[in-house]
Image (cartoon, rainbow, N blue to C red):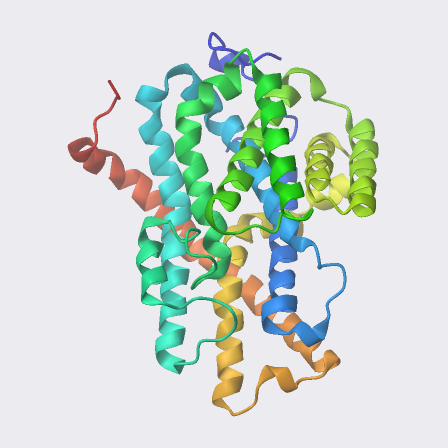
Length: 371
């Protein structure tokens, strides 16, 4: 089905596994898996490297999956409205996204500050400087390398992608030059990857922003293409995803994995095989709901554990492989439990409250429309 400026709400594409809240259930499962992968990667590199956890060396690419999913979902939920009339719809989008990402980001950053103040022990190659702290309230932390709650560099670039999406929703969602835009995104991403020696593990400055914006835009364009002509084709999507993954392994070029992720998203939405049932099972969906909390709480949690051991005059570096793996597992479980509580009692409640009370306040400060 076509998305264009004349589409009515009744004619908007409906995905087969979308519930009444506009959530695409299987993509929640993918998001949960990606959040766990990023957490284990950081445990393997910044917490307990001696654990040598398997299969997570390239889990930094799970962030690229996040960006693609974000563009896809933003197009699904807000794309039609912003493309139709962004001047009157931008405030709803901006308030909703602020209420979604900022409160938990602020809370977890504060937690990092408290941990540092209480222990006085900066740990690892992460900046805890006053200059980097000044950037945090404005979501500009990606311009200072890794700092404080270091995974939040992607929250910074994601927020910037939201701003750009407001103005580019029409050409991305309903414009005539979608293939050209997609080609430009692929070219920019490929050039960025090749110039970095084949890696997309770029998390600061303009390279991180280019990484985010191109992949977010590709996610939007994927939603458009999927809604029009790519539905009900999970078999070929799975085969092409495997082909891209194989080429990425051989060539050691990360941008090819993005092609695999694009196909994986298409495959995941409609498949009813074992993988599809796994993505739609209660555990996967719960992890998807908790994924943002998992993503932002795992760094404060592992810093707290590291400092707790240091306070007892025992460094986690002294643990052997088995002990390190057991501690990593225990910490991961603590993060998931904390994320569940955070999602239920903080994220959801604060988000609803902000959305409920923000409209009247913003009426006083921000015009309803742009000229």
